[in-house]
Image 1: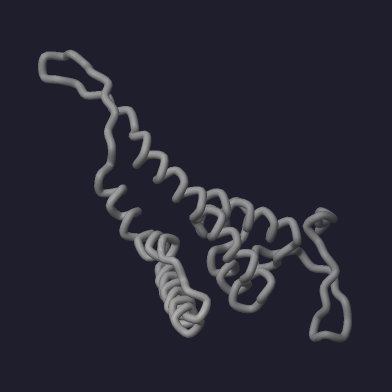
Image 2: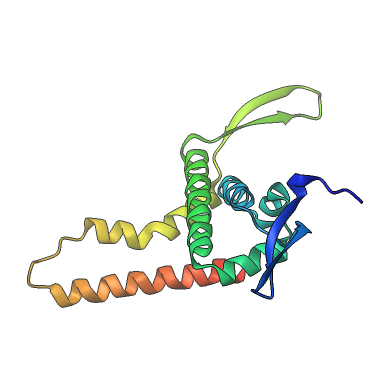
Length: 167
């Protein structure tokens, strides 16, 4: 039975001898990792990213757990996707979105809708940062600055844990 050359690869079996075998969905190539991370940064969706790369979702999570470099790249991809999402939401909050309203009499009107709940959520998320930005710090208040930085790091850690738990 002949196999396609691009589907076969040379692998170590038991760490001693090499053997030719067909690549499986569990195997990761550099291209698969790049495809996965690229799709993850675009979609912020592990399932879609895994499908794009041709790997299983469980294989992606296993690789994230076992490979620190991949885990770091994963976090960067999620961060990039989150920033892009945040920018889109900010634009909607500031500029609004066009909405077509159809009345019972059949007439239509286009109007701009401003999502107040979205704006309130964004305000709540960034309240601490905004307060910090407007508060002047005296040079001799080093301990206070240290405590605020540590508190902010703790908030970021909790946010990341919540995001990781939600995946």
